[in-house]
Image (cartoon, rainbow, N blue to C red; front, top):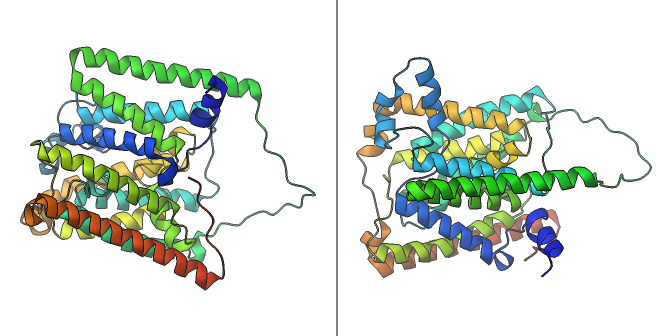
Length: 401
């Protein structure tokens, strides 16, 4: 394989998330989330809320929620902090490689309202459920936590309501039509593309160097950043968006991303199962109303905002200003939840059991139940896709692999 072929295929072109063609990318998923699992943390952006409060003299470190998740130190001394920095660096490097960085402003004020309001609702719901689409769904299910299934089902329902809500006339912005005689060809400035590719390589090498230097003295922090860089590259190149996975099912009938996520969790489950058999405890959270209510709010919020905790990160570094507002909303929503956590945690979360499917059904039984549920989810998704297109009199587009 020549350098130019590798560059175009892996660094510039988008990666298709379909399972058949992305086994290598799912391997990166697996490695990243194994590392996160072993370290016992989930990467998150929400500590920014606590840091901002501290700047104004609020002792948020004394709040019960932050104590519960052991939020101590600074982003540079925490595993989740270094992971997030790595993810931003990886996303930015990947966007520069593809010359996909451009400042894009929201076209209407209603979009900003959607972004902030949806971000607040999603941030509140995610923290209530003890995790977002990653910690309480994509990695929660492969860790055999019942609460993750509650969250996933509730998120799907919430996203349906969100899809219906965002189709209301109030969210339809006027579109200015312009008559043209022919389609304008897509063009790039070669010199700009070369400069940005080189800058992307500098960012990538700089992040890798930072991670390796950190690993010499603090191995866990350095490795967390390395895996963060890898995951950032993955989500930007494959344009992985959990919001799209749910929303597209209800609005356009497309199940491309949803099926890819199911296959990704199936790969992760067997890997995490092997870790559990070696004695590493999975991260299990309360299977209580918090997971259901949090999932409903999260599903509704991500569709209203147009992006989840994964999607807004890479779109923000691509220059899409709309997602800066989504990120701000996420921080605000998670901070509100942290403030009120002690008031409703006993009723909604901490008084409920943490249900590990491996303990409930036995090691092999829990693994089998997880795969049966994943298979059922896949069949429901495929069935919905066929039903949607049959009613519309259309044929689903062929998925690239």
